[in-house]
Image (tube, rainbow, N blue to C red):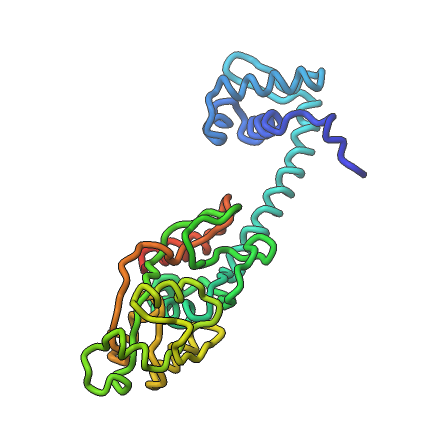
Length: 291
């Protein structure tokens, strides 16, 4: 049978009455609901006025339910118990569901994966589901808990928090450099380049270095992980964000040739406004600390 919503008393009044019936008094109900004694009494009077029947008998400091109040309390007890059961089942299911993260394949491979052990050391019970994709995903439509996006941090409909710098840098393998500590602009112009496809920012940066992007000998890859893999093999110079080069530079697989100091664009942690599941909150806290 459809619920006649417009005929139901206010939920706050029903909740106050059920707390009084269950706990046996106004003071106990007020403590359980974290409100004042007077607020509970007011809700009971409002409910009695709405229903046109007495629900509680007051005798000095004591109280008892009227027959009508006892009948209502039984029905409300069953209803609130069903609500509590449903909410707890939903929360339990949400806690078990993996935290879903959308991010670029290169950020997942180069930045996140080397750091994940520290997350699971702290939270071995939280499962993660990484969805590497170069496309920008609609978090709500695709059921993502959060995303990691590259850009200026201004996207409609989401909340964005700075995660880590994406300042651009140029690097090459020691094999390609053949003992040279660095390369001049003319030497870089003459080398092969391993670049990421459809990245307008890289063209602007190459020009800022005094190079002519349109005349470079270049191989273009669909994502940064492939261009980095080619650069490690000495196949050419790579232009990439510093965040994705850090591990290769510290391990000596690549040598830094140029480094910009611009604060934007950067990598941002992106979430849909509103409450998050506890596992997602834990991952967000760790992610911001790890950056």
